[in-house]
Image (tube, rainbow, N blue to C red; front, side, top):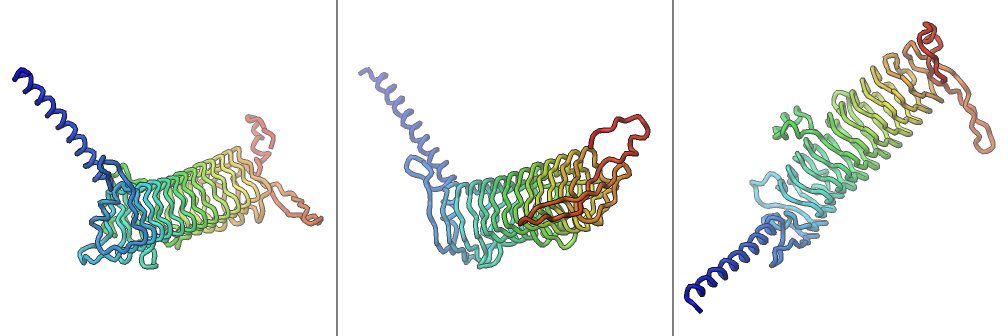
Length: 381
């Protein structure tokens, strides 16, 4: 072989070998960033179920994208300089944390990607998982069954389509004042909205003044759930979205829903006790067998809503927009109404065990006087 041709072949072979090594190295590096890797750079699972951790260096390497199982694990970190279990910025997708005990150090979920993860029954030595920085946490389609969570900072966090069955959320906060009070770093201004779109809250408790102003709970389900506030100035869901959501057998006490968008809401057998619904929009909502005791409805809109079997006793609806609303079979004492509307009483009969039960009910209808000016055509009620 000619010497120059031989040298050319060597150069080509060396280049091909370099490209091959570079590709393997790149795979391995990407794999290390994501978790455990095989020789070919493929991500593999890791299992630390039941483990006892006094150090997290190796664990954090494996956790990052490793789809790890940590069910029943316990953290008792012996580094006195640690203030938290630092899980921030990690990829925890599809990992399982069922009944994990974080000990005396709260986990840090800031900027963590934890979609499809399972955080059911997490705790801190039997106590609620408290003082957690979950700013911009992505935990969509995740599970929080039986989890006790107190003082979570959730500005910009996304829990859409997650399941919170039998969980407790005490003092969840996304407002600026809370972040300042606890000296937490806020999310970028355009990314501060709390999201729980399509989330399911079954037998849950929101307690001790959650501040989730402007949150998006559209298409969510609140079933047998309680939101209990000490005062409407502190339990803040004002300006939040509950569009096309479903409330059933749930209790809301001293909750600030002012300005909330509840368009197309379905609510059945719920109580709204001493709530602030000032300026709330309930257009095209379907509300059945609910009560609004001592609640402020100033300026609320029921445009096109179906309201049936509801108790408005003692309320003032005189500033509400009832245009095209159907409000029938209402119970209790009639509220104060806009001057264009009147009450029509009737008797509702129901057969129970062969006995006929009669209940005095009323409907809210447009007043005949509204059409006396001759300029508007009367519609059938």
